[in-house]
Image 1 (tube, each protein chain N blue to C red):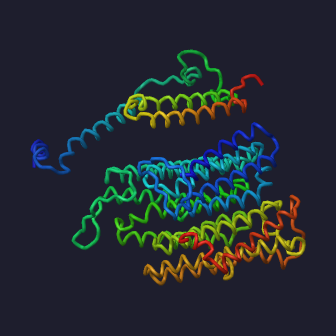
Image 2 (cartoon, rainbow over the protein chains, first blue to last red):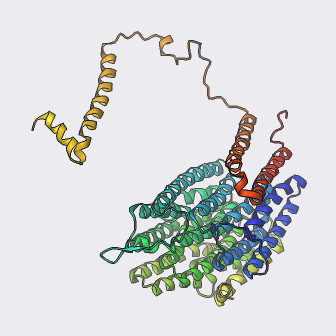
Image 3 (tube, one colour):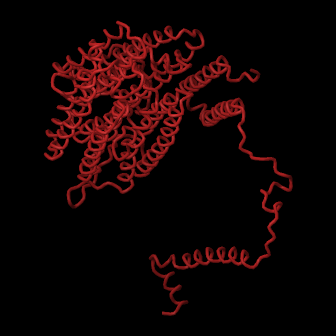
Length: 464
Length: 133
C-alpha cells in the first residue's frame, strides 16, 4: 500500500513543483528525491517495519513477489532519471508534468504488482497506460510523435475494450471479480477440468488484451511505430519499467487460471512465444535505425519473458524478476547513450570507441547483456526463463527455437558494437557528455556484470 | 408439404425452424425498402438545379463548411466542465449509502474531493481558465 499511496502523492507534488519553480534542474532533483522516498517507503513494507494499512476488501494483496518487483521497478526508474534526466528536461516545456506522469505510471505499476481482482487489474492498467499516451505525444511540434500517440491511444483503447469484454464474461461465469475463486472445479469424463464456456472465452479475451499490452506477436503491430515516434527518453521508460510491469500483471492474472484453460493453453502460448521470437528477431535484423531496432528487440525480449508465463512456477517468478532487472538496466543504458546522438542510425555510433571509450564500453556491456552473453545479467535471465520451462516439462523443440533466436539476436546487437569499434568516423554526439554521465554509465555496466556473476543479488531479495 | 402446415410445424417443435417466419419477415422488410427506393428513383420526376443539390439547412442559405478551426480555449473549458460534472455522479451512490458507510465512507469521499480540489487549484494556477490572453 505504501508504494501506491506514495507514488500518487509524489505525482501531485511534481505537478505543483512546476508551478512553484521553473528551474528544470530543481524539478529533476525533486523527482529524484521523491523516488528515493518512494523506494524507502516500499522497502519499509517489504521488511514489514511500517505500512499504511487500508481495508481494501481483498481487492489488493501484498505478496513478496509484487513488493520486490516494486522495489526493482522504482530503482530502475531512479537510474533512468539520473542517467537521462537531462533529456527529460529537454523533451518539451512541461518538465514537471512529465515527472508527474512518470510517478502516476509508477502508481499503476504498484497496483499491477498487487491486484487481487479483475477490477483492480483494470484500474492499474488504465493508470499505467493513460499517462503513457500523453508522454508519447510530449514532443508536441513533431508530427511523428503526435501520430504515435494517436495510434497508441486508439489501439490501446481497443485492447482495453477487449479486456473489459473478457472481464465481463468471467464475471458472468463466476459471479465475482476475485482472481482465485475457491469454487470447486468439476472434472469432466476425460479428466480435464470442466470450465464454463463463458469463463474460457473471457480468459482468452483477457489474454489477447494482455498480449497486446506487452507487445507479444501477433498483437505487436503498434510497438515499432509508437516506440519509434515517441521521444527517445520516454521510449526508454516505456520499453523497460512499463513492459516489465505488464508481465508481472500477466503472470499474476494467469497463474491460478491455467488449469481452467487446459492443455490447449500451452499450445496457444507456445504459438505466441514462437511468433513473438520470430517476428521480433527477424525484423530487427533489417532495421536501419537503432531506435527501431531496439523496439523490435523489445518484442523479441518479450518473447523470452513469456516463458515465465509458460512455466509459471516459482523458478519462473524468480527468473522474471531477474529478467526485468537485467533487461531494464541494459535498455535504459543503451537509450541513455542513443538519445545523446543526433539521429538514431547505426552510423551515428561510428568511431564512438575511439572518442568516448567509457561510453562505448558501457554500451557494449548493455548490448551483450541484451544478447544474453555469459558474465552479463542477461545470460542468467535467459537461463532462468528456459530452465523453468524445462523444469515444467516443456517440449524440447521450443527450447531449441528459443536458443536459435537468441543467436539471431546477437547479429543485430553486434552491429552496434561493430560500428563503435571497427568503423571509422566521428560519432554525432549532440549534447555534451559530462563526466558524471560517464561515471553513471560505467557504474551501470559494472552493475550488469555483477548481476551476471552473482544473480543471487536479486534472487535473494525474494527469500531473505 | 404445404406452406401453411410448415408454419404450424415450426410452432410445434423447438428448433431453428421456429425462426422461419422471422426470416421471411426480414427478407420482406429488406426487399420492400429496396424496391421502394429503386422504384421511386426510376419513376419519380427529376429536376436537378443548383438550389436542390445544396445541403438542406431548414431553408436558410449555407454559410460554408462547419469544420472550421475553433479556439482551443472552448475545448479546454468544455472538457474541464465535463470532468467536474462527472465527479458529481459519484456523490449519488454515496448519498444513498450515507448512513451505512459511516465515518470511513466520509473519509473516502473527503479524500476523493480533496484530490479533485488539488486538480482544480492546479488548473487555475496553470492558467487553463484564463479567457483573455
